[in-house]
Length: 70
Image (cartoon, rainbow, N blue to C red; front, side, top):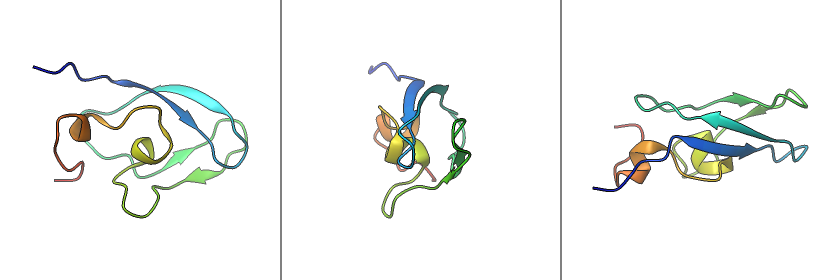
């Protein structure tokens, strides 16, 4: 069984700030406020959550091979 990683480094596309965050295991995270510039991040088209768009690793459901929001 594959180990699911829960820690991701999310990088703001506006200011470049990187923050280490723990990803939720039971919900999609559609929004994330950058702690440096306060911009509200939203998933890119085709991505299920902000971690899949701006994180160093995809969210736990995608790591398991499932669609995040099912």
